[in-house]
Length: 560
Figure 1 (cartoon, rainbow, N blue to C red):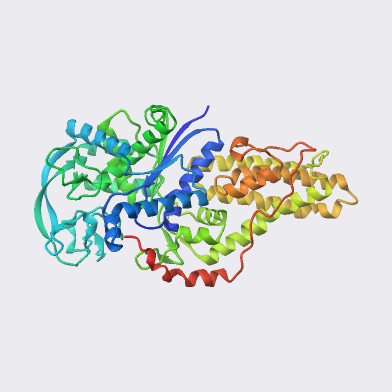
Figure 2 (cartoon, one colour):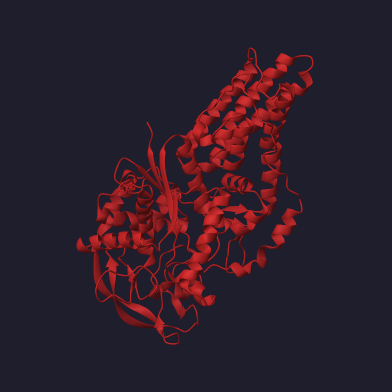
């Protein structure tokens, strides 16, 4: 029986290009998970979009002497192009700037307000006397009271990940001009997060399947006691506040961005011609997964569930498989210092699958992981080219040349051949279980282990030696490896969709891997193959020095 799987993926700020940290943190694992479930025949809805509100957008606009909308349009288009090239298969990638998103945000805001979960109160807001305006939290900078980081922002410390209120910072200053702000009272709406302390505590106790880091972070905030948070700010860019007297204020981005998961689902439903189609993923027997980086855990395991509890009748998150961070060449990724690898730059020079593989096999699931060009070269040349690609190309080429472009009749299989075919089925089952639990790193390693074992088998059997004197023996080993390749193109498909589709075609199948489903397709003798080509391209050693030297020269693409 098929399942319904909702996949919400973090909304990237449309103020700068995507880098590999974004991909390893949220977008690649989400796509792997979505492709796996579609292959299993499950009904999947994966949504996200460009977060076009908030201070990062307006800061970028001021830096470039342009408008926030022009900034959003530029980077949203770049995101869409990158998703297509990398194979990130969203059912809908939209923006938070649509009328639909504002309507859904207003519905949730007003419902929570009417139920007493949102209330009005006054708060001290930072005002810069030099800039002569109220400062959004990310326009403020200071020293974090928790870890001592001297460039923490007014909403969150980028070093320790703690959510902050601006006045908690020491040495508070305006990000733009470094002037110390003065405090002025301003009326705002607040989410009564503290009202959900008990419900969230009881609910979190039930989430025994969550990753340790996600549970640990969630319990840390619960143990400290949840504090109410302002949901409006003195801004002129964002979703308007649907209340009289608040015309010069906007709904705070942290509140409306998570609502994007629901608004995108409703937008998707309308595009399907069925305004109610979203309900199957939000109100019926469906599981919802949220793929984010670890700095967003608080908003997805506490704030968003509280909003959903208050609103009522919508599914709470089933899992929030947040990843840790990706470092680059052993150093913490820093866009302000140019220490980043931009996705669009990578995709201009290299194929997508080698990057997907390298990030997947070293995914930061339980701790920070590192990307280096040396490792990328090794993974591509030694594992994709020399192991998996070589296995596929040499057996397909051999079969095409020596058996008239068709699958040979194997005769009676010996114990060794039967054992390898059994291992293919075991691998399919093992990868299935790992992917279902969002253990992507272990799953891709298990897939590559099957390729390595098939290579050993092929070397042992050496059909190129027996083809003239023992043709039946040669046919047996070729048939066996071709059958294993049908398993490999399936288990690798969530990770390597482009090469899996190529292999699917070389093996003589029509349609797509997705249509074939999650199974080993043992090939019947006489099944026609197509002339093969290499699945992967070997890279030159000199790319390591070349790419590493460019890291610090990419500062023009800074992201706030």
